Length: 335
Image (cartoon, rainbow, N blue to C red; front, side, top):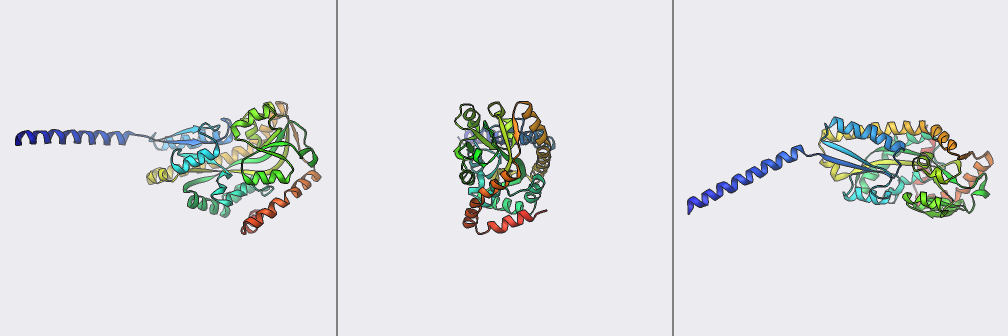
């Protein structure tokens, strides 16, 4: 009886040992996959940069141990859904914007009108002390790892009606993001604000549910909205920023070497994306004009009236956030 028990013990031990060895072998050959979600069209500078830099650098330098899959055009959900997914670990990474301002109010600088002079100014601010502070708060309050800032560009209004003064803008059924600051800005401009997920914009424009929308023209082009819009007002009323964020637990699970590779890839991707955004404006404008769209540059009086119309917006900002006035001064004084 003891001999039989001993034999069974040996067999069981051997099976367990074999399973552990096979399991260890499986783990050593397994790959980690980073799914990167965003709301931009495939041809947008964000996806070009992610594909040509982020994906290629990581897969090459980890020798395939980490794979990168890019899900553009809201394929994994709208911005809010995928942001929440990164926080709870159901999605690895997202290119997100001011949807995160509910957790980090200072992210709202990407919603505040006429704050940034141009792309160079925005890049210096976000890659300087102001941007570093916002990243730290994002990691502390939202529980994600921030990998860097990138640019969506300056938002402009597209429409099916020529907008040449404030009176033309008044009453337009305009799709704006479902973010409080955008709604407040739209109300200050006397717009008829409609908030829709970005994936519903094309159909809503096509069917006349809305008259127009506001986004950088790279998004207008990449999402094909030029097929159902006639005009672009070069208002440059808001600079649209983005941040690369990755799930914190996933990040902590990578080795030091892997984290170094990912950070390097994100930095090079962001730098490349800023360059693409700066270079693409005139190319995108020509493309859209060739497709029949007309660009309208606001004259000095229109611009002055435009900026004056949003002054009550800033009165509310200063009242809600005691730190806002100093932050705005710091941003405007950045050279």
